[in-house]
Image (tube, rainbow, N blue to C red):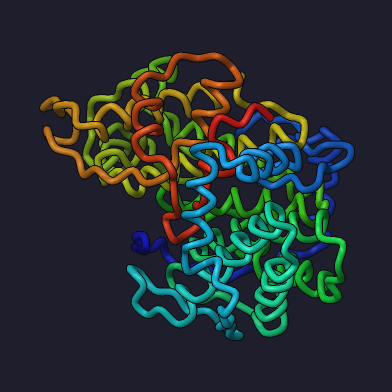
Length: 405
């Protein structure tokens, strides 16, 4: 399930001074990310736990599960029955994770992603049950990787780092800020995120949109855990530029927006980049005509960053980000539900398989903002309880299903 690789760039040592200087300007609002016009977004004080799910959301989910209410109880049962919640799980860390295109080679890639998802699963189980065995298991998994991991290599390294790096901070936020026990190596874990993950993802990849959106999701989450305002602002600015270039709105004009530096300077190049699709309609994504699975990765990452941003005090749902998310969900949901595909769309055929990616965006836009989203609602209800895509999405009926917080 790996993606198409981009040309591999080695991580630049990036003069820490240069990054710090530019980031300081971003943080103070004196500089916007190149080509974006977006001002600094980091909060004065970070909210914890605050990566994709907040304490209020966790409390709501916990209350519903303990009361046996549906769909949260069945979502919780699904989670605890999964392999990710096993208390007998043994971490499989390695110093260098080597990930090639389409998981060839897969030297630690699946192990890393699954251990990160397991840590997050255990953190959720801890919060709901207050059974400290789950908290200790989450800590055990995070400690195992932070003790040995030094690098990600090969063509899929940026994407792999983004996927695993999206799950780790979600787990770490819950454990650090809700578990009263001891996490002696939390500083070492933070160093791993700062020194191994962040340099690989913070500058993007100039690859397919779902790559960079997942990378920015990870960068935003890691920045929250590290309370790194400069990296947070950098990631958020790149995220907004990439979101605008991933989901088309009619207001964009005749052609989709592009990302600076990609050299998509002709219509033919843009059509090729959009998987051969030459008719652009609101809600279409850059990868709709590739397949819905990869499209779902991009949509999910957009919703996760928007949710983290809201928790941290900046509500993107009322901006173009929210509108693009709403339209992308609605467009893809329509065809995922089986609507006939017109001849102008992807040659009259789409590859369905959107995945468990609608809960966060649907809850934010429909339940909180009151926007009608008929097809997205139908698909969300049909897929409950939403499970995991085994990459970086997990248990979102439990955490975000009809959650008012």
